[in-house]
Amino acid sequence: MNFLSDAFAAIYENNLFGIWEEQYKPIFDKLYTEGGYIWLGMIFLLVPIVGMALFYWVWRYPYARLWHWLIWLAVLTLIVSFWTRGYTNSFLAEFLTNPETEEFTRSLASRYASINLFLGLITGFLISLLLKMTSKIQKHLPF
Image (cartoon, rainbow, N blue to C red; front, side):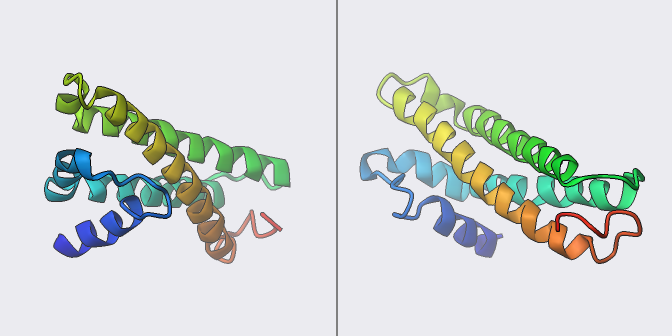
């Protein structure tokens, strides 16, 4: 478990996104020690994987077009984003009731939702390239 926490913490605490702030270290410590980062990472990985598996293996509409695939991918990434925001707010609820950390925690949930939306989009695209090879109906999508 520590490996997963380290791997996902490297994504979410990265200076690239400008999220880490030393004064809010207890928030990041809770996410790290109690598995919050693992769940955030699983959201952006599992939703697109399961969703694209449904698209390629279950949906039997043989005349699907690129716009079907694009809408499906957009829906999956929106699910990832909303689920991330909800999970972050519920996981860090104790910091939402503290006036000193409330604003930062709300912005943190929005930032994590944006990051996961982007990562979910990439995951969905890459997994679709793999799954299209195994699909009997949707071999032509996304390209």
